[in-house]
Length: 181
Length: 180
Image (cartoon, rainbow over all chains, first blue to last red; front, side, top):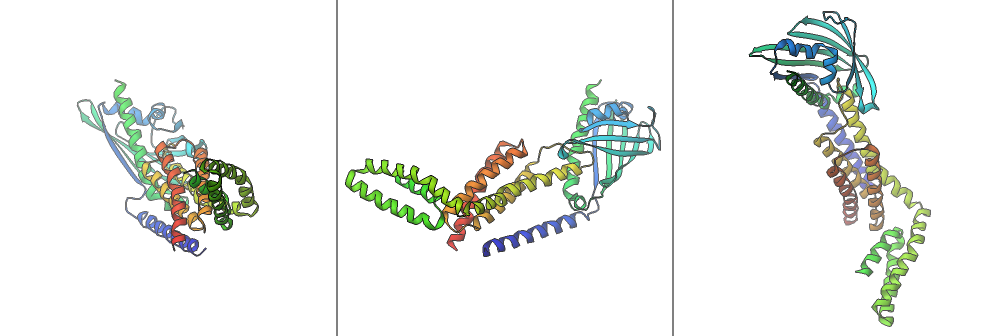
């Protein structure tokens, strides 16, 4: 049993070192920050539709199953939006993200405050810049804070995964927008 | 070759304390039969002995409570670490604000394999004899395959590496302990 206890102590120490490393990494300036941008060969007004219209959003944001909004089709500051996500890693449960528009300048800027009580809160901004020649650049900039203590500790793992997911989604938007000529 | 295979089989089937005696007795008798009645008859006798004694030997191990220890080592050495890693990556994907699918990245699977090997080595270190290490290795492989099946779709290479590395690490852990 001596070897087992020694090995268990070594394993415990390793877990402590990993937890310490995660805690330190979670204190970096860019913790919880996501940024992604892509050039789309479509005019800014068309790209704007893909980020502001619920039906179009459902096509490129993976695991987004529904978008409920109280703006009756018109955007604007203060408009509330509920994004319903399917969580395949949680038995396919549906999770609602409560969004409130804080900046609305079509066709260039849409900023939302996003909250899931007990899970996270943050902001997400969509910036569309006209590049001329029928092309535009879409930038998505987000900042999230996690509420769950274990999620806070795991932030250095969660944020890069979220970043990769965002890149896949934005590439899908480019493909869909450019195919819809 | 047959004699060697049968003696390994009996070593694995018999409980740690009596395995060496059982194999010693059988090898002695095998030599006598080979000298008196020829090698062919000795091989037949050996195979019959192996088939006849495997069930009682395994039964004795179950009654002695050794199998409970083997099962616990198997659970702690493979099923539990694989399941905990799976739950950890599920948690990470679930915490992504806009969610993600169930596919895992290569580095996450590599972490799973490292954790699995560390726990399997611990299970190997808990064994005192070659036969108990072999039994734990079989339990670890069986429980790892059941857990991977329960978890669902995974890359074939990852499954292959898990099913080879886990029992190999148990045997290595047991061997290292015996050397010390």
